Image (tube, rainbow, N blue to C red; front, side, top):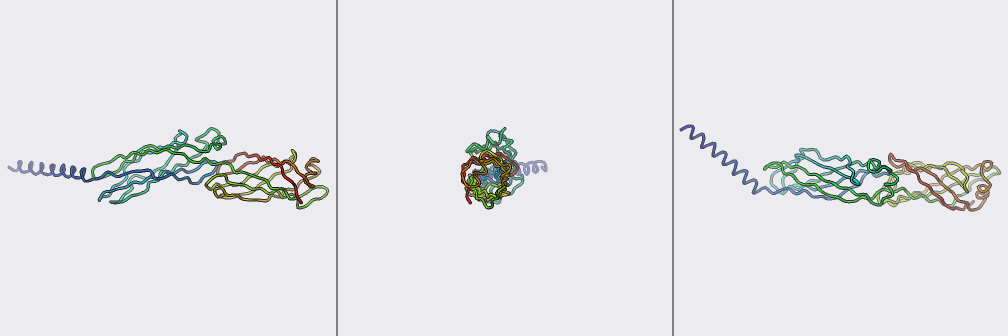
Length: 275
């Protein structure tokens, strides 16, 4: 008699659990996981941070949590190292949360020649994988798939103004060389400096350096005036004639420092020396 009673109680409990599971499956609504946007941060000529942002929405009256993440990010079909939210993230009942998947991309890991990569207008990216969400009815797997493009950072544009002779003697002259450095990108770009050798009328006359220009605004420009003392005794006659009032071709073979990357840039321009 006692055994029969225990068996009946056990069956009742099992039946109740099965009913509860069935009820939860019927009443529980699957969370939604959708792509929101892509953010670019810390952009330089050496790399950037690409962050894909997703919305996880819980339409139920019970809380859920993040149980597993399987995420892969590819840039130009090459997989890069990416981060993801930690497991255990709690999502309140009837709540939503942004999930960020940041990746630090070094262009040297994507392209064999960084300078060639930077000539591209756009680069492709692709995210794929899934997340696992712990719910009252078990772990639900939600797919994660998205692809797009981002603007590849460009070298700045450099333009000379007409050099101004501030002092001249029989043996030399001090000349102010005005430079305008323009960020060709729509986003901010740090320029730690532009440094290189300057030639006037084909003759090397010295070195110009802008110093740290800081983070340049998207499509923004900065103007600097760089003094240089030219020694007439070692300069060619064409240089002397130009400095004393005339036109000459200037060539600037320089290096641009942006983030961890240094890249060459050359400017050839006809200028007029003024006093």
